[in-house]
Image 1: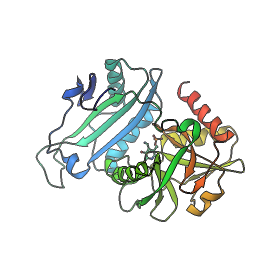
Image 2 (image 1 turned 90 degrees about the vertical axis):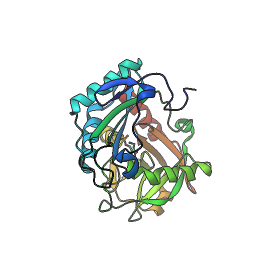
Image 3 (image 1 turned 180 degrees about the horizontal axis):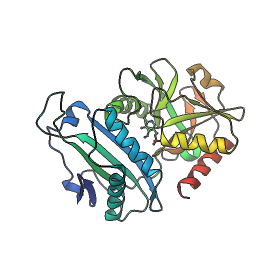
Length: 289
Ligand code: PMP
């Protein structure tokens, strides 16, 4: 076991330089810790190359902007930081976590425009996100929480505050023996899981929720483009929960999840079919190309 995430050997990039893993700390009066002024990215490096690294760095800066924060590093500088961190740890295959947050400073109230925006890039070796679900299909619970309206919170940001109900829903799911939980959105449409987007197959065509109230994942966009290139019809549309019964196959997409087959959502079951297996294999090939 590598041990607790704050007690490991290695290097973390923090505010412009590489520091010892155990020294990558923040003060207790960090604004982000109290008010969720934090955005992050999850990326995977395959064979020494981060898949869609630039897209992730652009999204990180965009997420920060949506939270009224300007990251004091350009996309190019963030890219350099990620590769410097990977090199310092001797990794060619790793998960990469960039995080930007409003730090401690002159303000400790809700308003904190004078506090510095900070950036760190860490990484770790991370295998299959859903364990052996890649073969058998993940078992997914239905979350009691709903994905919020874009009028309530900036739903296009990959922001810490949006994950509060994800952690709660995933804990509840795991306590019942499920791997993850599926959210409906504030209107009742099928939305996404706690860290992954969702796809369904029916009659050889693919259906996936329209990303108008949740994170439009980079993996989601990659898989849609890949399927369309292969001539598969993909419908991005609002999906009602009562449609779940009629879908034949289902999979999740995400940087960590990659393409993970789903065998069950609540009372509904799905087969790990040919299109699911082909899509998972094609994605694996693409990220290592
Ligand atoms: N939705 C949520 C809530 C997520 O955390 C993630 C993982 N970043 C995704 C979707 C998938 O996004 P991506 O494909 O960009 O990793």
